[in-house]
Image 1 (cartoon, rainbow, N blue to C red):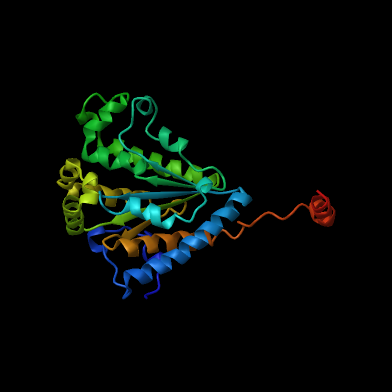
Image 2 (image 1 turned 45 degrees about the vertical axis):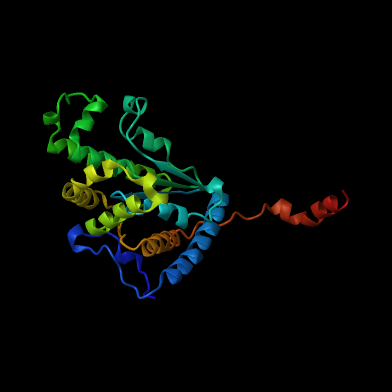
Length: 292
């Protein structure tokens, strides 16, 4: 199986999504990919245990992609070995009335990981420069000063949001949160096939929504805005990775491998040493327990 180098997927210069592959041929069976992923998930699980004891960093995993790009199943498979206390998944849908009474980043701050834990954003703060850009009328629900109608939403408004997101990510990164962002790069044809399977396979019928078809009509707009958002917010503190997503098994392995490789850069993450006084009296404590 072809070796996976995380740098091959990392956004370091301006990208053109149409020029990037949605499928990666590695010459391996699904079984082999799953076996590779199993080994990575085991390592990540052990790492999270050490992180929990170390209690200095949190990890924020951001997953973005069009409907059917495999985000839910990726979360299930990549993080299934984690202790439930060590990972929290948040899915950000249409903001509710309470959330709309705050700025758009407020609910994302609330879901950030505690030290020693992983947080996964399944759809993220980037919805605020993606869905709202395709459907700018949603911005009116935020009741912002100076925004009375769609025509009041200027190019400068979106530039400001990009800057605010960069600042948000820089702030949390400087305060101990490791930020890794993944765009699940799905082809339009593969999405069509997956939507058809949802209609044809009984166990997946419940996943189908007519809203998926409506959003599909805006495919080109979404690709334009994804591309712009990725290019403007790929930073050293919060890098983007574009993951070929037509092959679900391969996409899961790539994401798992990238997370593992990136976490290896934090060489200070270690289990704390036993207190010297406790170490010096181990025999005494063992004797006390043995006598019970």
